[in-house]
Length: 225
Image 1 (spheres, rainbow, N blue to C red):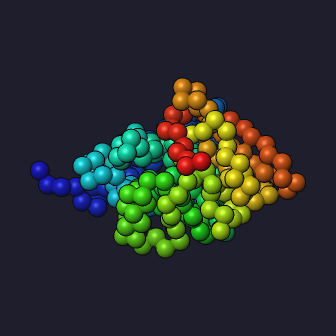
Image 2 (image 1 turned 90 degrees about the vertical axis):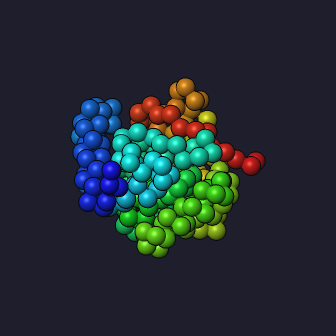
């Protein structure tokens, strides 16, 4: 059997985005909107997800399911990646902090939408692989470092938007501190069997307002504290 080529991957990418649209239609009442921002869907179309999964899983890269990437971690289901990105509401001028780089797919999507992306990954092997894969894609506005994501990246704070791709019982205090007034943080919160995506907004006086989205299941945020 011949290996898949870029034409095949482009078709599968379009199908992936169509499936995301079906999910949004089905979850419209829970999400409070009938469709995702077109900029988010266009970014999902442009980023080749098959470059951000282990080689053995390239043939299933565009299925709407999480996939294992090693170290008991996964790359998120495409619908969940799109949902978190849509909830984050990234603007072209934004500086975004991402916690949990993995192999870099979500980083690449954010880099399509934002001015700069600063991503923190606790697993050194992932950070190295993500840098290689983002480099192959020609992504120059995403920056990665190895570290404890709960501490953020203070040198480049404050951030317009913060995306955390791992769960915790409460949002880390240092991330809230590094969020600009008027900024937004999206992450899963709650115990393993009762997590929900949460959107937290910081008003101009430094107060926080949170709202819930749909139930999800993520691995726990690892810290060195």
